[in-house]
Length: 129
Image (cartoon, rainbow, N blue to C red; front, side, top):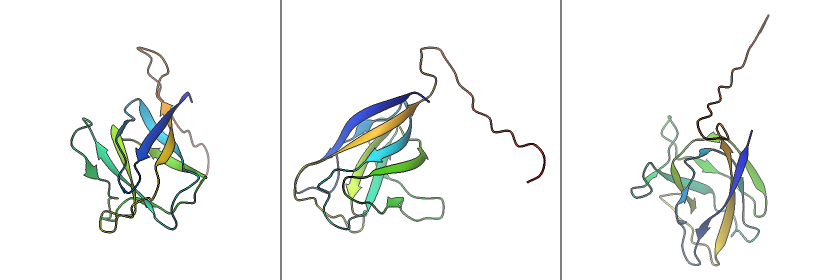
């Protein structure tokens, strides 16, 4: 699993929504939280296919995709596939501005690893359940 680490996105001081970062090279598998994250604000997301128009991310059951987070920790993400992404402090209904600049790091599982290379992953289950 070749990983690429992206520094960012960044939530500016006094804001709740970050700038966008390009995650189109693969699926997000880990997010590193800033060490100075304010309080109990959940982490939510916006996504975009083109880096211009963003939409809030929701689960199939209609709930906003949200993570309960702790400052200075890593969050393992179950292969969040998105083109471009923004991070939000709080929810779309209750954004929570951060009082200082907050910079994240994102690990991307880069599919393939080389130009023209295509990787297929299969899980084989033999026998009983």
